[in-house]
Image (cartoon, rainbow, N blue to C red):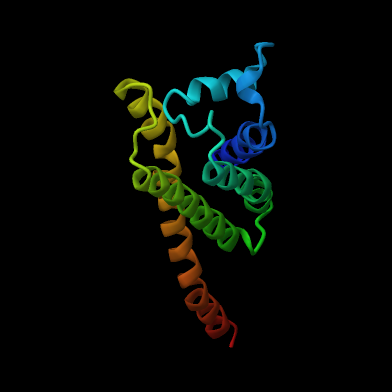
Length: 160
């Protein structure tokens, strides 16, 4: 549940701000979210340049995956039957978005960082969680979903 709360709020607040604030890089007020994106742009300048692919991925993530992640928190907490399929779907969405993010950078030359330090810290480090954790969750959910019919069959046999 902690991952879903964290990733949901990150998608909605942080990525939502980026996707829907096209002038963030010009902000001189010191607004925290604008400063976060200015700093992150040192690791991937496509953010400062408002690259269409990056804006599209972040916008979809903020609007769809953010709220769905928070719905996942609710589904887990209340034991809803759709919990595993929802987590699986969101995890696949996160993996797809991360793959598109990395592939578009690679195809465009992967030369968007101010230095190797920022590249490794922000571009690789900050995004690694969205590869590792959704992969682990997707595997776990897949196993649970596949085991469900077998468990259902066992319950029917016990009732008879």
